[in-house]
Length: 511
Ligand SMILES: [Zn+2]
Image (tube, rainbow, N blue to C red; front, side, top):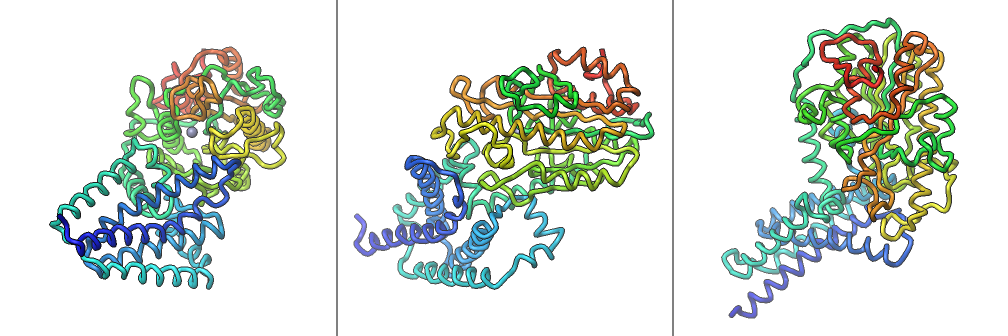
């Protein structure tokens, strides 16, 4: 039997932990701001996401309250302090914490952070922190007896719940860890591991790399979730690729990616990794380094975060620029590839004789509506909710096809300034996308629609004259089956670089 007093203490402990969690949950609300929702069901789903975060917070609090009183107040007030700052910028500027932003705040440009400080944030943070101290101080109202079996049982239960919720295999882990306040820990851990990945130097595995052309521009665009079967250039019913067709882009319509999500496929594409040696993606440098050795000016322009599995390659380029730094998967304002264009044009204007551009686009990433500009809302009606299950399937396809039309335009904007140069542009999407086949949507699960991926090549007239066989061969090879393994060797081959690492049997430019 437990005495009344002890039982009261136990109830107070639980109530206090819930109160602390709900207070933090106020800041979490900003992370859901602007989420497109269409029905009561959508609101209930989002409410359940919010509730799962508050529940996880309660479990954390049950453990943190075991600290001595003062220790708990300091830890809780610090979490609130950070959460209130994130909530402020999320609400006022739609800023989401990610590792790129952490990099800027911690390393590069403190002036940028100083610019963001104005009096409303001081008032907001001061109020939030003061209230949090008052709430944390309620810890004085009860005593936790560590050796009590109720205490031990509660802590074990809280810990197990957290493990179940936050394990990488849990479907709750991503929605919880990517939101306030858990994103503070998640992004800091990710940041540290990305830094380690970048600083672990990889060896150069080739002996020579010599450029044969004295003036050449190579552009490689990493596409996102572009499936070949929804492209008019490949025979799709909707005319969503007019620009590529006008520019004489050659489409490779049978390309297969072994991987169906960005983090695995991008390292595979950029390195010598192939189906037989997939691990080279994590031990070797990318083709960017071959271009460096051959004397090219190398530029990486990213419209997605440099995630850990490929962060290393972004640092191989002599210039590495990221646009749309403060975006995250839970942002629902426009996030467009055209933001790459001003930086691209500026770099092109430098007139480097030999240059390699690697562009990492956001392409046809979910949530489709935010990845095309308003004038590309061609196929209507478009989807209204961010919850896949509550979207009409035709609306999803309409929105997706709008991203295709936008990507077609974006590619043309990359190609246009190359027309009078000796230039080649290669596009390869990291993977495809399922649009309802066998009830499957998006990517990163099991559907061959996610493996089939779009690939294109465009050559300037000057380049065609210099490489008549390459031009002939791509037109001959365009319906052949290739794995994305082709990219590493093909891009080096296209650049006329003589190197011992090149295996022309992979090249799409050879017979
Ligand atoms: Zn992807």
